[in-house]
Image (tube, rainbow, N blue to C red; front, side, top):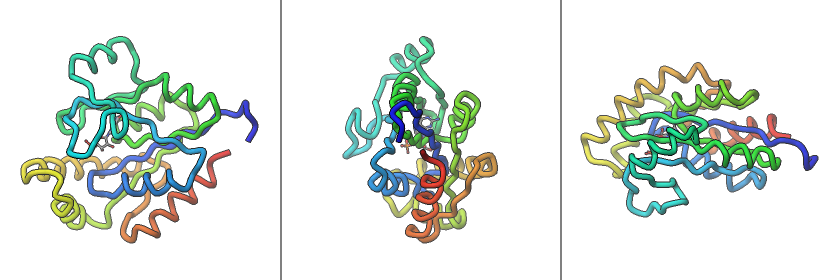
Length: 189
Ligand code: 5GP
């Protein structure tokens, strides 16, 4: 790759339980020039999550202060918590020739697509809503009311699948991985 060449931006969205994080992790492991952007969030860390690794965990006050300064490329309220992508981090990485992957919701994806020309939007879907509900329950990460909230949010997130350039149905993980790898391979420099 030419050193002066700007990296490409890939935006992966999809409902909780679609398996998008596992797909992104697997893609990242196999793609040396592709880096995950670490988002900011006001939600509490889950067990096993570390500040600066899964997210930058911010208080609402800090988040709102950064937002007021225009620090975010995009931000959204998801399930009652605020999430956002720091603009300077993404711009600097792209400028230095790295490819960047954003794992963000459809609201954020739409904002980024408006601001960054040529960003690729990928939407990960579960095979059915029933399977998605099962996955949300089985992963045992959230209590029943949170699962219900996430399921409702998933139903509305799914309505935005058509806005992405690519849709992947994550039924068999290996097949979905092959699809996302192909999309990356075909679109990065
Ligand atoms: P979770 O709290 O389960 O990690 O993520 C909840 C949702 O927030 C997921 O759909 C995830 O993709 C989305 N999300 C994570 N980071 C960001 C971000 O920086 N911006 C936006 N708009 N959504 C995000």
